[in-house]
Image (tube, rainbow, N blue to C red; front, side, top):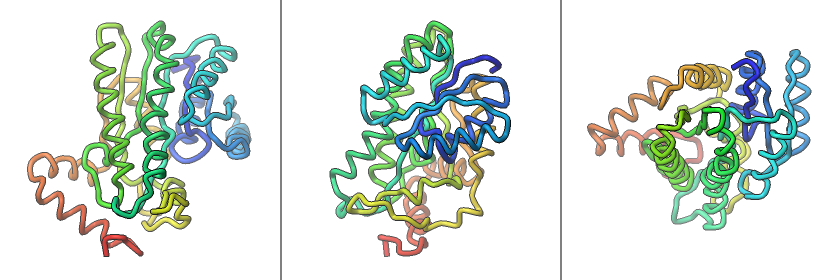
Length: 268
């Protein structure tokens, strides 16, 4: 990955920031994006303190023109694009019957259309370099869970889109990777949308018992280097996918019971 140019959306915290660190350590030229300029600059300073240089660009992935400008900025800075990592995402926690449709659209706009827009503008340059398009999906993109209707729908849509893209470019040397982490310690649950579209604030899960963002980033890096097709992370995540494939009615009960145990679960 030395001297490869990598764009990481949602790179100011969590998995995105960890990815920026891992790729920078290996000599890649990294551009991270995010909606909040202060968060981006803090991430840049944090990485600089570790001896790592990353470029930043304020952009909202749900806005098509921001994605076009993001690609233009990468080309202006580095003259090429080798890898796009579609990492920006937002979650939600509410029953579908209670969840605001405006908030539902917001989740789809960020998680799904953000991937579509960024990929559309970066793809011609990635094709030139026979590079990689990466989607940071979720176990929810393979097995949905209650009270995450919009999040699950967005991740299923992302995976369907990237599967189509992979088939379209398979004879042009382009690598398309889908990574499905399980629960990962990050800010995503703190920013998760409640039924009226406001952030929930505190995480309902034990963050210290989850896979770290750094561990996910290392797995993603290896998968890009080896040009894997799909990566499903954690034993629990792999088991969930396996049970859902062979015994879906049991999977329904298991995921219901798991989510019902959360503090203030809407399933209670």
